[in-house]
Image 1 (cartoon, rainbow, N blue to C red):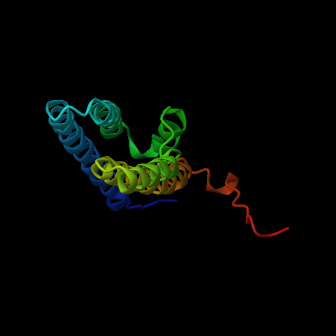
Image 2: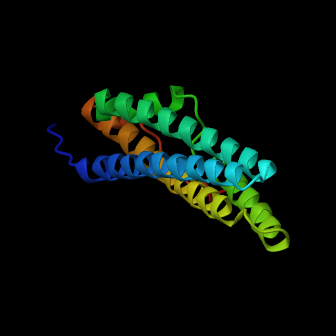
Image 3: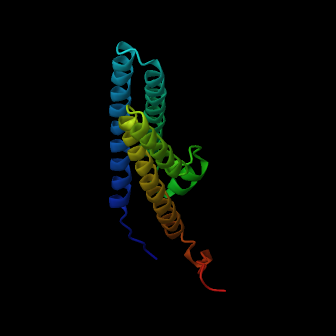
Length: 165
């Protein structure tokens, strides 16, 4: 039996989202570091420390996702499902946490002021995490099905309906 499958669109979409996310993280790190300098010169050390932590958060996110993007480009599509299961950062798990932190910072911005930029940056980071989580899980399933089809193990594949009793 000959199997013809086309899945480049989904892979390209994930790579584009990851590239956009790494660029966003780099931009956010640069913006937060500029705000660190601004708040240091205006003698507001508590805000500069908060934006310094934000700078480190976005720099580590940038480096982590740049490494992930590099490894993802080298991985064959058939083995994406194994790669995503082995890779350690839990994509999307912290998305809602980032949104909650941004809400706390937005409330602090309303009460004292000066935290709105960081709140917006972290909220967008949380949305990126949620979108990445959905894309990665969709590609895991698609990659596993592609792997089973190309290895001719389709007769051993069992799809269980989660809504049936």
